[in-house]
Image 1: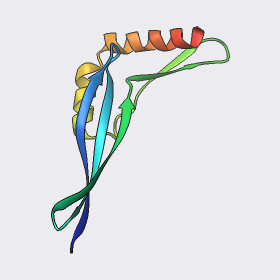
Image 2: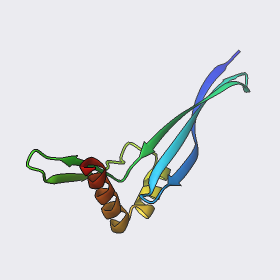
Image 3: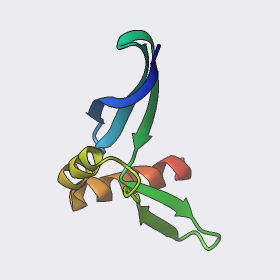
Image 4: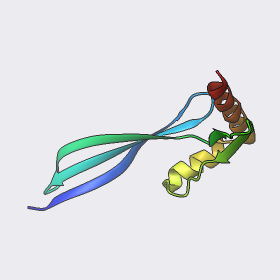
Length: 98
């Protein structure tokens, strides 16, 4: 009886106006090649994080995607244009200012 555990990025979606990337990872447990269970974990990768400083200026930081799969990195590099990042920065500022 061989029990195996496999983790697969089975769904990658570009979500919303600011091109957030939603990644679903399936964890599959098999016994002798027969699937016993499958569970899911999701995480979202945004292009930019924004912090309001004490002097009311903003610091915007591009997201480090080096820990993501090559597929997610390729998608991020394709859809996170300067225009998309600037729009995300603006909406982040607006959300904090509201």
